[in-house]
Image (cartoon, rainbow, N blue to C red; front, side):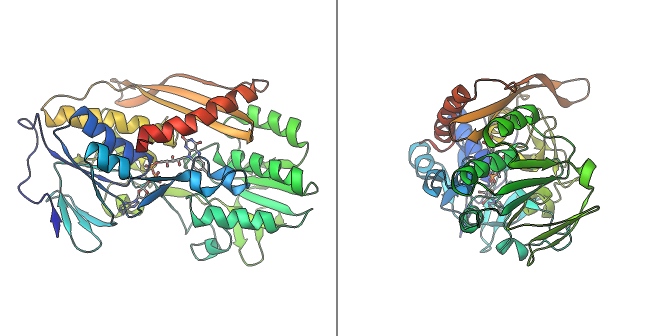
Length: 408
Ligand SMILES: Cc1cc2nc3c(=O)[nH]c(=O)nc-3n(C[C@H](O)[C@H](O)[C@H](O)COP(=O)(O)OP(=O)(O)OC[C@H]3O[C@@H](n4cnc5c(N)ncnc54)[C@H](O)[C@@H]3O)c2cc1C
């Protein structure tokens, strides 16, 4: 079996065609597939993703707190297949043969590309926390990839007795969705206040401050009193060890026993990127921000959580913005033209209750002096901002964003 096998073509002379393979059908990859085709309908686009249905992390904190059902998180690739003639291959990529510009699938089949877009998301640094590994995550969930992990954490919170402690460990930066752990704490607090009001939430953080902190802390005080406690690494020191069976966390200075333990581990680029020699010592993929081409291979573009796009945060919104910039650069490069100067945007909402939200926004340009992305402007909801109005925007964003990526 093989798709698009044949000689490699690249550079000038491909004004109307070219084979682009996209690996990973999440927010980065699906956006790239869609916009590559829309920007140049002459391209042949193959999207390789092992799942038939993608489950969105945005919205999954609501599912954890029993406020939304998992069905609303699901999107299929049918629209992309049907409306844009994108070839969806349901398979996992086992490895890349970058020299021959081929992607090798788990069953040994090969797919040839002129340009490859890689958006494999994150994987976890299982070795980073003593006592917490993939086996432990089957009963002490991370819930940092949507699916069975989300459902497991939701069940544990539902089963917890009133008066129990939910302990969330928040990872060091950089990681997927910087405000995500604090949105999760807020929505769990909403559930507990209603159903188990004597309970507590403790966030043990590897950091000394966090995204949208003033607005989160104001909302916690107003909505949940002292139910949510955030403890900085300055106070408790490093997370030393986890006893998953006993749901116990040891820091440098203390030991905590939880009724529900949610460990969000330190992260790195998806293992395929690592195994393909596209990561550096940081564990993430360095790229040229003009085109998101890997600094190690100009025919491979890495977007989304897996790439280093500082100062952009790792979010679905960033992945979507990077995918469009990357698509424009690939279309230009296959026509033998230089990439256009990029302008990227991140806008990230966090719910602090089902009808209240806060947000942060950033606009990023390119500095020709140092070849890096730079912040052009940022802003966030002030502590006393209109959280109800923001919640309306957030709901509208959740709906329209999925349409932008998956077409419905
Ligand atoms: C709880 C939570 C809440 C969040 N809320 C928000 C939010 O409100 N707003 C926001 O902007 N962001 C949010 N995010 C972040 C967002 O989910 C990620 O930043 C986004 O999914 C990144 O997109 P991606 O394409 O890089 O990775 P993903 O969306 O994870 O997609 C990666 C895809 O690659 C596939 N893949 C991996 N390896 C292979 C392989 N070898 N072969 C083929 N396919 C492969 C995977 O199956 C997966 O489908 C949240 C995250 C979490 C955890």
